[in-house]
Image (cartoon, rainbow, N blue to C red; front, top):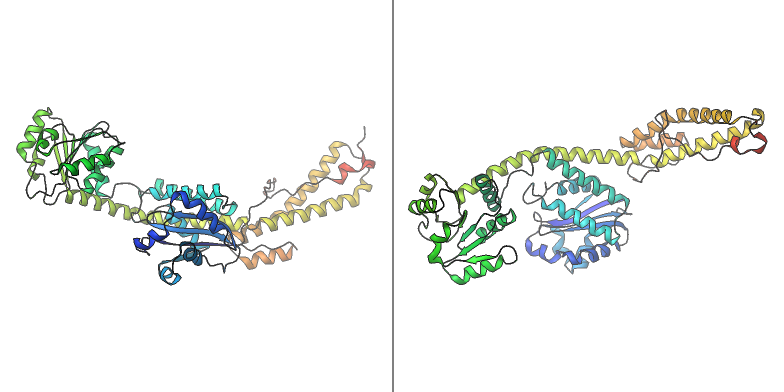
Length: 460
C-alpha cells in the first residue's frame, strides 16, 4: 500500500490556474467519489481551498499516477498542468499533511482556517465512503499534531494582517468591543475588512460615510444582515465621529480631515470617553498631533504594518519550534505504524504456540487421570504461563524490528519461527490482544482438551 499526495498551491500555481481546478463545497463529495473510482485507489480525500487543491490517496500499486485525474477531470492540458503539480509519497506525504494541518505550509503561517478546512474535507470523504482505517488513523494523527503545535508553540499567536492588528489594538484600548460604535469614513476595501473584523468581535452599530453618497450606500448594503448600518451624509462627518468609539478613515483626501481641534471637541462631547482612530489613508486623514490628546489613540498604516511585521517575525521564530514538533510527531506516527506492522506475525506466532500447547495437553491427558476443577485451572494457568513467557522474547524482537524499520531482521525472525513475514511498510490494524503478566500478548484461548474430554470429568 502506498500513500500519495498530489496537488497545487499558492506557491506552485497562479490563481488563474487554481480557479480552474477549484472545487466548491457542493461538488466536493462527487469529485472525491470520482477520485475513489480511479483504478488502484483504495482510500482518498480532497482538500480544496482558495490557496490549494490537494488529493490524498492510498493506492494499491505505487505506479498509480494521479496527475492524469487532474487533467482529465478538469479538462486541462496535462502539459500545462504538470509544471505546477507537486507529488509526495509515503513518509514525505505524511510530513506534508502534518505541516499543512499545522498551517506551516500556509500563505500566512499560523492561520487557523486551514485545520478546519482539512477537517471539513475529511468529514466529506467519510460521508462519501472514501476513507477507511488507513486514512482515518493518519488524519486523526495529523489533527492531534496540529493541535499540539498550536498549543505548545506561539505559532498562532499575534495578528499578522492589517485588519486583524487594528482589531487587536481596539480590544486593548476598550477591553471589550461589545456594543462599540464603528464609523467608516471612506469606502476603501481595507477599511471595510477592518470593520468586518470588529463586528465579528462584537462591535455594535456601523456608521458609513463617503464624499459620494452612492458609494456609502453600497458599502452599507455590504453589512446588511450583520449589523443594521447607517449612512451618514459626508457634511455630517464630525457630528457622527463624536458618536463613534472607533473611526476607520480611508478617504484619499489630500489633507488631514481630523485635526486636534476636532479631537478636543470629540472628547468634550464624549465626556472624555476614549476614541480610537484607524487611519488607513495615504496621505493620512488624521493629523498625528491628535495622538497627543489624552483619550485619543491614532494608528496609521505604517504603525499597523510595523506591528504586523513584528508579529510575523515572532510567528516565524515560533514556526521553527513548530517545525521541530511536527517532525517529532511524524516520526512518532511512523514508529506506531511500523510497530503495528508486526501484529500479523505476532498473531501467527501466538496461534502456532497455542496449537502446540493444545496438542501437548491432548497427548498427555490420559496420564493425568481425572482432575478437579481447581486442578484443571492450575494446568491451564501453568501451560499458558509457560507459553507466554516463552513467546515474550520473540514477540518483543518482532516489535523492535518493525519499530526500527529493519525489514531484514523482521524477515529473519519470521523465518526462524516459521510465521508469515510482513514488511514494516505494510500497515495493517492489529487484532486486539490482551497483555499477559509476562508483558506479552495472550494467544487465542480455544477450548482446552482437559475441559472437554468426558473421561476426565472432575471428581465429585
